[in-house]
Every structure is written in C-alpha cells, then in structure tokens.
Image (cartoon, rainbow, N blue to C red; front, side, top):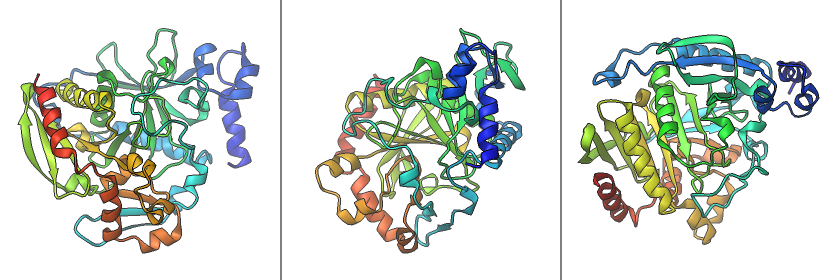
Length: 389
C-alpha cells in the first residue's frame, strides 16, 4: 500500500466521536463506528417492486454505477493487494469457454483458511479473523431495506445501536473488476451458514445491480469459504460464465412456481433454481436446500445469476478427496481451490506455468476430482423430497 493510501486509511479510521479515538487508531476496525457513533454511506432499497413481474422488470444501472465508482476510488487509494487490471486473462478454446486469470502469489497474499475442511457447520470463533476487524476504509456502503419504502443513497448516515448493519466492502484480494463482499448483519457475528434473510438480501443486491454482468457467489465451509463469518462475494464480468451457458432439465416444480433444474453435460454436478412469484419464494426454496445440505454435512457452492433470476447450487467433494489422499500431487501443486467462481468457470491461476498450460481438458480433469458424481442421483432425490414436504 502506498504511504498516501495508508494515511487516508488512518484518517478514515479517526472519523466519528473523539471518545475512544485511541482504540480506533490502533485497530482501525469497522466496529469502532458502532461503538463511537460514526457514519457510513447508505443505500436503501424498497421491496415494493416485488410482484409477479419482478424478475422481468427493466434493468436500471444507477446502483451498480455507484458501487463500481466507489470500488474504483478504493482501488485508486491503493487498498488492494494487487492491481486486477494488470492481471492477464484469457478464454480457453473448447466447448465450455472457461476463463482463466493469472494472479501470481495470490495464495500467499490471501488470508489462509482457519477452519476445518471436513465440517460444513462450525460455530463462530471470535478469536479468529472476522469482518468486524476490517478497516473502515474497506467499506463501500451499508445496504439496507428502506423503512420508508423508497430507494435512496446518501453519502453519510449515522449507525444506531439497533440497526442491522449490512455491509458492502471491498475484497482486498480481488479476482475481478468490482470484487466486493456482502456481509449481512455484520455485528451479529453469524457463522458461514445460510439463512433465508441473508439469502434474500443477496437477491436484493442482485436485483438492485440489475445487470447480468454482476455475479454473486457463496461458498460453504468445506467448499473453500476461508472465513467463518457469514458473507457473499460479487464482481462484475461482462460475459457469461461457463455454468450460466450450460443446458438444464427441470426435475420438479414446487409451490409458488419455483422450478428445480439439474445441470446437464457440465463437469460439476448441481442444481439450478428459477421462477416463483417473488424473491421470497426463490429464497425460501434455495435456503431450504442449503439447510438440507448443511445438516447432512455436504459442502456446496452457489452462483446467483441474471439479476437474481437464477441460482446455481453446486455439490462438491474435493476437500474430502484431498484429505483421503485421492487428489494427484500435480493438481495440488496448482493451489487452485474449487470455490464458487472456479466451479462456475472462472479460474484463478497463481503460477504462470499453470496459466500458460491451462486447457479445457486439464480443467475438466480437475473438475472430475471436485464434482460429487457418485452420490448425486441419490442426493438429488433426497433434496427434491425434502423440498416437497
């Protein structure tokens, strides 16, 4: 980080009341805002737009433009570990059109996983890193439902003790343009476990962005979530991911009109959810799926696509195979972890050798180690039956 960027970060950390300033100077934590009466930019959304035609409404770009503008301001201040614009990328020839990006050394700069990989549900641990410890300079804005049923943005709004405080912050190790984190109810210190309100919040984020280029991802524990503090990720990519182009077949239609589909001819097994009369219907069904998987200790990754119209849930077993010594050393040496972006078809390479030698055949071989293929049919039937109850 440049000295100017560091100085600006320190000045941001000193905003708010003078009481407790010494503590904020030392830690520069977002939590200081709550303790000492600070302010943050605030975007409020309205649920009133929801209805039978919600998912086909005309898009608007204002929220996304504001979000990306503030992300670029953070980038100009040198708050990121690397310049993502300078990182090479390419589309591989072949059936799937996988995208690969070279970010050398990201495995060193990125925060390491601090949790067991064999348990999807683990309690929140205050002693380990969590998002209440991020610098205030990393925060883009709060993202809250309006209590006046209006959509609005203000540059500074106070944080009250009873506020839920949903935070949008930069990912300091970005894998793409506009890479951000959505942290629901940050001060409740929720573990990385799906709940309906948080999933619904992420769907509102997708709706407000109103662009098919804005992708939202989620990783469960055991599926390469590195921090056990509830969060989603998102970034802007002006093209379809490989998974978004995959063919599907409908396997069930539930009450409320939500359809469950399965991916066809894609290297990683998974479900796609779409339809419903409103966002609540979709969030309810997908969250129930996630709960079923979590209770059964099945790791999964999620991609929220097409402004919230489609949700992909991928089932994987890579960490289990890794622990059993069933993954080849050649694959392990690449240090590519199959999280939501990778499984969706956007793979980050940490070594130039792997970037230059990347091919569709190699990536499909990697995904063969990832996908829950043997047990998928049985699990599919269990998921559908659970959702029909």
